[in-house]
Length: 349
Image (cartoon, rainbow, N blue to C red; front, side, top):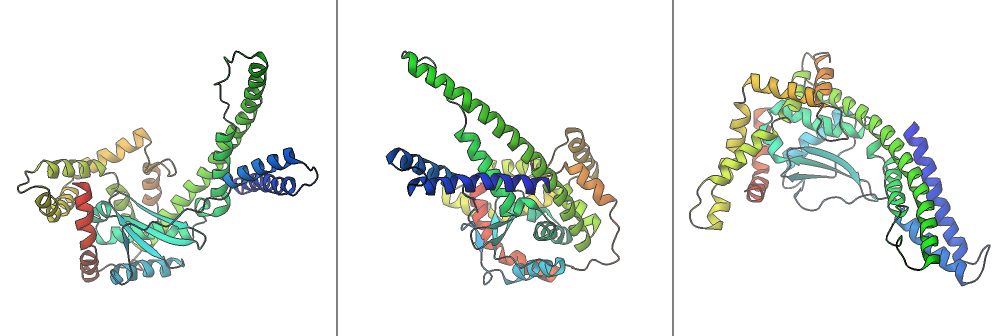
């Protein structure tokens, strides 16, 4: 609620700048070219403060025609959670996954990192989809235009009010005094903007981290708490991916670049899956303990991973998960992802 109200105040300031610019350009309440120039400047500032809605990614997009089984699984996850269907699915090379609502049409886009998808078991994949799709219905303020655009406006205000000290040594005394006064005024404004931005981030991230916990619980309800925990623990295996990539890149390649691009593609994903399967339980526990000691997280917008695991450990187990990915559908999805595997292997190697 605090983030929502503070965002409203930021938007009111942006609207006031826009209206002031329009009024000055049309000559009210002051006429003359100085007022109109000031109005144009205000309109330029209002343009910088406009909401950034983002753009859906176009590269790596899988169409429904090319991946009907994968889209069917994602649609089943959406139906189970009461979320709207996704509009597109992107497959990329990140050891991660993401979901966003983008553009004027509020395009719902799911991004699946193929390296992460490769190391997960079937039900862990369901848990991953449940977590990402859960952001549609878990009250995550970071996906909304209202608060996200307010953060963008505060960032623009921070840049606009950041004082420049280039003219402090100007030989002209009048210019030097005017520059010093300007720097002082901008410094005061910038300090206020920094304080508001820090408060907004604190409220915004606190709300977002709570939404991540709710998404984890949705993943546990859709698959099982054990599979949701396994999915989070698998995300600690990024060092395993790095080791596999280092070995694959060190393999001798005969026949030039074309053979290098074509030769290792099947082996890369098999090697990655095998490396993830053979991580000893003691190493998994060590990585979890290291995550707790370092208070590490997926990124700054997520809660520490050890707290997410602790919450899932207390989640009630389900007798039977409402959504099961059987071996047949999983094999069909793997076949649909084959072109993406070839493309991403070439990118990584």
